[in-house]
Amino acid sequence: GIQVEQSPPDLILQEGANSTLRCNFSDSVNNLQWFHQNPWGQLINLFYIPSGTKQNGRLSATTVATERYSLLYISSSQTTDSGVYFCAVERGSGTYKYIFGTGTRLKVLA
Amino acid sequence: DTAVSQTPKYLVTQMGNDKSIKCEQNLGHDTMYWYKQDSKKFLKIMFSYNNKELIINETVPNRFSPKSPDKAHLNLHINSLELGDSAVYFCASSQVRDLPYEQYFGPGTRLTVT
Image (cartoon, rainbow over all chains, first blue to last red; front, side, top):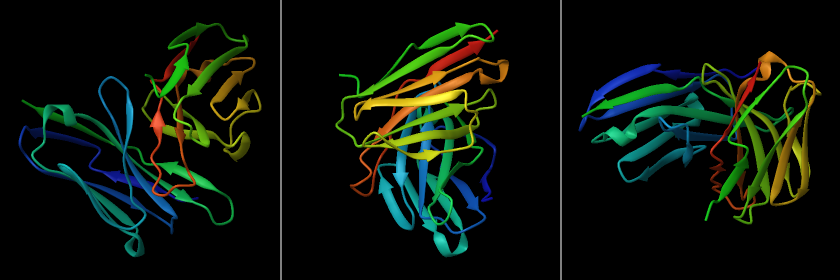
């Protein structure tokens, strides 16, 4: 089945720093989403991005579907960015599959 | 107003019992989901319902049965609970017909089986 790998697994940043999180997937996908889970467990949908680039405030995401990866950029990080970032891919041809990556745990220090 | 709510928030029960987790969304969305997050934070989709019809049914034991009485509710019933069922269960909803679609998650139900 399709594999979804995220890197790095853990990341510690000083407040104000920028970072790039990566999501690699092993097969073509119909959809890719990024999620943030805050330290209190709440899950938030960040981007729906099967291809191209999107921006939302200090966060932006780029998916290069032909090369099977997506990047999540966090600029001027804040302590509230801490938590776990997941990507998830959706594959609709044949058997439907919705697979999460293992996540990147981010800690932003004040 | 809570968009996606789940009850209960915590559930502690013994092996072999049957339990249910309820989920309600007031966003008017057409699709609802159940996810399981294990102790290592690994997330997995379990079920998805679109307009009360099951559209995703990942490989989960038959002991898990979703029930959608209407578009706003998707309940999860678990029979004969096992230790390995201990996890956090998240409900979510989205309006899939309108792309791009965003999923809204409930606060989660932490299930502990002893």
